[in-house]
Length: 135
Image 1 (cartoon, rainbow, N blue to C red):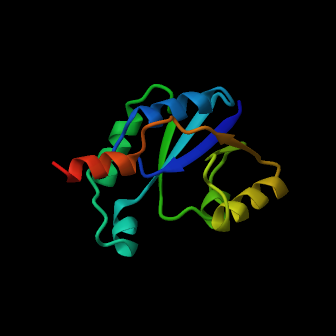
Image 2: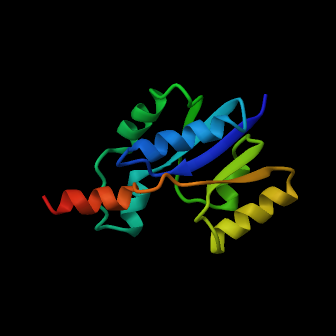
């Protein structure tokens, strides 16, 4: 059985997230979704507007049939992904540079495949937050 890993905040859950999970399942049988810890986010971005707690986001993600396992992470890094049992890493097409290059290099050197997935046009969490702040 092949395992694919993707990660994100998934706070303002939307159709793009669901489509991401469906894309992931085209590459592997088992989908691991890593959700970023809210306390960690607030530690480095104290003004961040987080809608759901980490526990609530885990509950939401656990209810989605495409997802086989949900884990919580602090930061996206080589140290983080080294601890996870996966075969394929799913990155967004915009995840380039810095730590993403380090992660991709680690995957390439450790027999892990990296796939780049397309974003759903016209929707993102930032635009949802922006629209809600206008109301």
